[in-house]
Length: 302
Image (cartoon, rainbow, N blue to C red):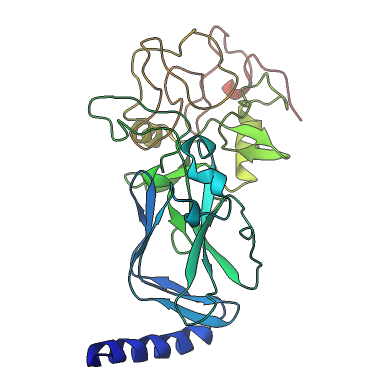
């Protein structure tokens, strides 16, 4: 053992003792980063079940490697399409350097318990290939690739649950990837969900949309923010087939171009009229006659 190595081990041991004294401790050198099929976890300090652990240097997990997962089926790109995943720090069999595992489970990874693992964050994978779009941030991305703006961890996350969301730095907000659907009794951003468009169940209008989003810690978009995060979407076209898609995500327009923004947000333009926080747009073809334009053309929903 060299002198430098001995010093490093002493420092790691001292750090692990300090981390062990704080049950909720988690610190890292930077936010995790990704390439299309890899996620790199930075140097970090983490408490797992009152044990202190130190990752002295960044480690990269390959999504295409079965060893990275608690369920090897997710090493196949098609099985990751449009889904949320999580990365966990796990207690090693010996030493103070944690091991890491990827999982689709939102509580604990398969084969582990809450006592020997800790969820640190997660990410979302692209639902349908983007294809080649000149100047588009996601040009060339295929189904199952990590959406780079979707990565979150315990120190950088949304007020709401982070599933189905991406970070848009220019407006300093987390934004839903998909048009809102209704899952397990609440509003959600999921691939293939039935869009809450006023006709689907439960019946809603603009006021109800604001309420459902508020109950999960979200809000309707402001026009100024929408203009920013929709950038990179199709312009001047509508959805292929020119009819209500009913379900969220993965669509292309009449020119065969994917309907996706530079941040990975689906169906911003040409799919469906959306309610906004400051744009009270009546249903197309309806003459405004009520006390609120959010309710025009729609029956009341309790």
